[in-house]
Image (cartoon, rainbow, N blue to C red; front, side, top):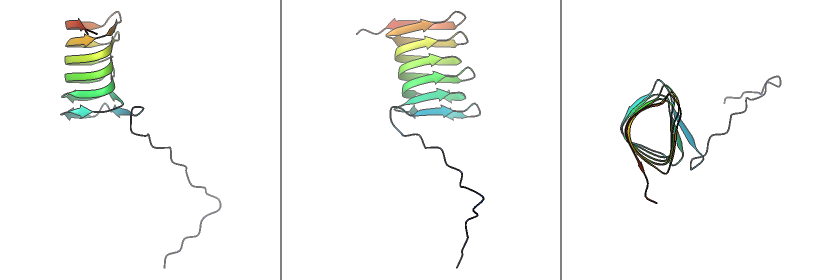
Amino acid sequence: MFNKTADPTTSPVPRPPMPQAGNGAKSILGSDLRITGEIACSGTVEIMGEIDGNITANALIVGQEGRVSGSVKAGSVEVKGRLDGKVDSSAFAMRSTASVAADITYDTLVIESGAQIEGRFTRSKS
């Protein structure tokens, strides 16, 4: 009934491959996004917007414009923006633009000059 002939002068635009779920996946939450609730991810979560709730992930990156309020449990946490709450991580890094008001449990710790911290650091008992 419907028939369309292919135009030989045009070629189809290839689609980029979709990321696979799992430990290698990275989820980016944009700057125009505001979430209230729980976030769980087996890969990496990069926050550019605002999150009010608990986050569980393999790795968490809070971007320079990102804001997180709540509990965080992640293998590694890198903060460039604002984080308020409680953090349990193996590796915790605060970049020079970070502002953190939290109680942090860590195995390894990096704090760059200029980062602001209010809270308590506790090294994991391993």
